[in-house]
Image (cartoon, rainbow over all chains, first blue to last red; front, side, top):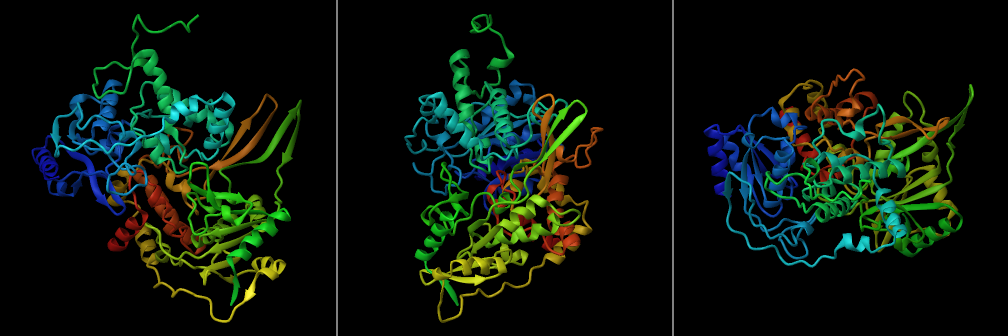
Length: 288
Length: 331
């Protein structure tokens, strides 16, 4: 922790950056913080409660964060994929951010309390082999053990095994709880559109009311817009106040992109985006 | 003191359901989360738990039609929606949720009388259940309520001796007891009432807010906020809605209202493109202002019952009690 605080204080005092985006101790656990003065670097913490994907604050949508000046952002291995995603899509220039990688041994599941165990581990960490990010300018923290082993049912495969009617019934039931607050979009580091299709009214592409039609149109559109872009941070699912398993949609779409285009979320910004590139070998038998 | 045993409460649910009265209670949804749901037996209810979304959705659903239209040539036919509803009993609402509904009656009956809101209000009897222990993030006493406040409830149950002590709060509550009189008993002794909390400092918060429309606090808390509106979704008192016309074909369609929130840029974006609340700080300020300055100025009470859902659901760790304490410190 001291290494992180000292680095942040140094970056701020030598004016390499204007703000360090990290975690602090909040009234209800660890939460994002924006440290702008070297003396406030003491606030920074990092432990298994730091589940948030902080690169969401680097999105061009976040004018208030941008106004603070050049950022340094603290990232876990998984979060670095969001930084890479923003760079890959020209939403962020590599030289405009200082990436502070922290070594991580897994974070807590939504609503779970420390200590980290097989029962409290975040599902996305269950098979994570990355203790440190591949994209960073500074790497801090002690070496962490691998996350506890946790056997998880493959929920996407379980859904694939259903009949279309059963699958429809599953999603109809889940999406019925949606109130269209759009928390999923707002917390997403890759939802960078200045103006979302769901907010457009001339024409109204997506009905704004949270009925079956509107909810289906919204969640399908979002899943498709995340195809080959979703970095799997799970913030949409964590932000959803109605507990809708949105990650299942993104994982399903992601698995199709992986199979068709050999693409997986990467923390290497030079890995081309499947939606932004064309290879002669790309599957195209569906174009007739 | 009037009491009801757990067995008789189960019998009450059974009798109500048998005669066709819907009983709504905190109950588990398929994913394990607790929501307000129709139950057919008391065993399905998760009494004492706070549903993840609030009671308001029983009176102001996330979306509902207002009327539909059919156009034939130059003739337009409008079909109204019904504003009378079948009887319904809510069982086990936490006091923060019951109080919120009464708070909202003021705005729903203010510049026009919201027929759909009051139609559902008239049809619904609320049996609240006093909380025995605070949940993390609850702050009802700080906004002038209590874990066993009867406000907004028709009947208030307090856990007592394996069953419940029953406080009859309204005539509607009395009617429910009278209609099922055999299930309730008179037991000697006084109902267990909690000592009232010290008076809240809400007037000081309001005074500070009224003179600090521009303040560094808003910018600071706005940075962290994703503007996701989860807080408003789960809030028992956030009641803003949008009204949209949904064409369902060339000549027919539905006018509908659905929840909206001041936390999104779209809420205030003008047709010109100008947005008077163009950053998240100003939008978060609006949420705090509406609850602790604007609503008190108009209706004499804060628009918050301290349920703590906003803090618990915030993906970025924004904490309303913390903001209020900071304002108290600044005032």
